[in-house]
Length: 390
Ligand code: PHB
Image 1: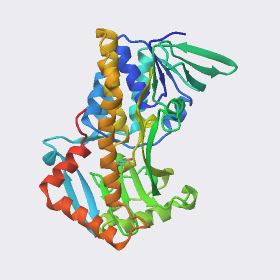
Image 2 (image 1 turned 120 degrees about the vertical axis):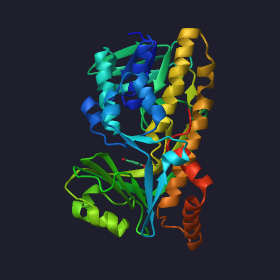
Image 3 (image 1 turned 30 degrees about the vertical axis):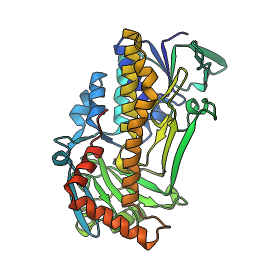
Image 4 (image 1 turned 45 degrees about the horizontal axis):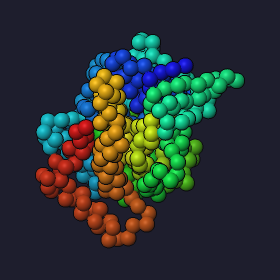
């Protein structure tokens, strides 16, 4: 089989890129290791930047997002028993974010790919990028006993942190930067009315908590937990009790609880691999970088990679201009690092760090007090939270 672009990974990044390229007449195939049901069972974050939303519309996938997604003009940060609101629109020059779950977005992308007859192969086993340093790269995968070879011009590695793409870049080429945080987030999804119309990030001496939502009938809550905890060790009652402890009294009193329909623990990690291009292999999204979820940057960081890749590919195929491809790694990384900085900073600001000395805790309190006392700091927060320009 021969295509122009072989995309490894059928998550939102890979699907969005294949859809955008298809609409420009560029032939792609998406190879996904897991089944569609498995991909759609993953519960991920749900805060989109407008830059991402625009790309979804350009891919002709924005209809349901625009209908069902909620525009949020602000967020709350609770600390020391009080709630402070950050007016994102006011401090970002009129911007906002869209609350729409990654799972729904992925569903829309699959539907759009199906409608156009896009090639999306599920359960592709042993996917292997080959000869990516040559002009004729190819990718092999296994379908049962059959090994299938896909010849292509470019390989996109959009297969996540654990994927094969980044691992196929030689160790002496790749530089990896990583920070692992000494805790995780225990997340619960429940079919209950959200406690607040806007997100609440809660700093508390017992640990961080977050009240988020997917819709007016579906809530998503998180609490910071030690890495040694397991979801099975947390009954629903224990979760709701701990969440209430960490919220201001008037919020806790309003919290509607219910059975969890999903419960999982995600460790927090910051990670960047450089460069994001090796020969004809280009990395995108979690394959190259991970953020802790605190700043809601993960999916949005992937979207900027896709934006740069999409334009680079179109310039290459339509204009014979390779500047975008040649500059892809540097350009993508410049924005990736800014998202890393913001996610790291928000994580440091709001969590309880078991090894902190009293001095560190004082600085943390001061950082928060400064944020709410300075218009410059609020502007900086808002422009990062709604997403820096591509
Ligand atoms: C979520 O809704 O899952 C969510 C929202 C905001 C974050 C992280 C996760 O910062």
